[in-house]
Image (cartoon, rainbow, N blue to C red; front, top):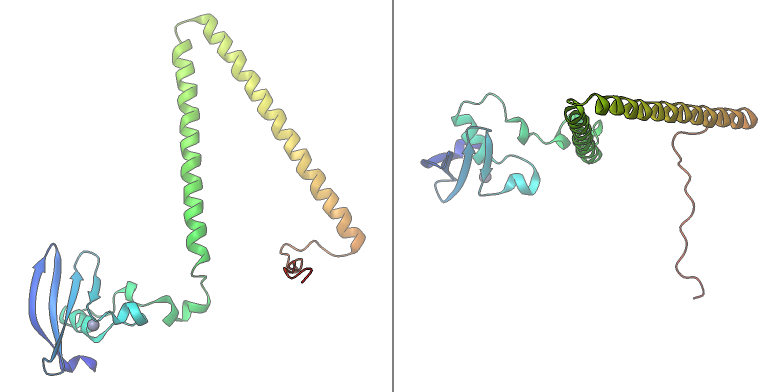
Length: 191
Ligand SMILES: [Zn+2]
């Protein structure tokens, strides 16, 4: 519908990008539409998409010229779809990034641990006494870790028991989310 007034004035390839000079309204105005064939990223010098989140007619014209059946996914903003109310837009990204960073940190630590263990084993390998010492040391470490785990589990059980006792007493369960927050301290004290 909007594309009948558009036409292509010029077309070239530069640095892997396809650049179309799209004219509009009897060639009075032209807009440069940059198209990246590898990821279908499309930008237009009219910047309508960046201002309003709606693909402009020039971008649409290029997609049509390329015989696209549908608009590239990245140009259908979440806010225009039925998913808009179902997906948190900001929370998810941050948490995911954080989770990824945590996983990478943990992997790094575990790698360090394994390399320490391997180094110990390869250093002790040639000497029976060293091997025996290492076995004793590692066994000691393992027993420490086991004791720690048992203590931790008991602690958790006690905590949940305590929570259960309180729940029984007040006849309600502890809310998982706290919606009542303490009031803000006013700043106009003494004025
Ligand atoms: Zn445009």
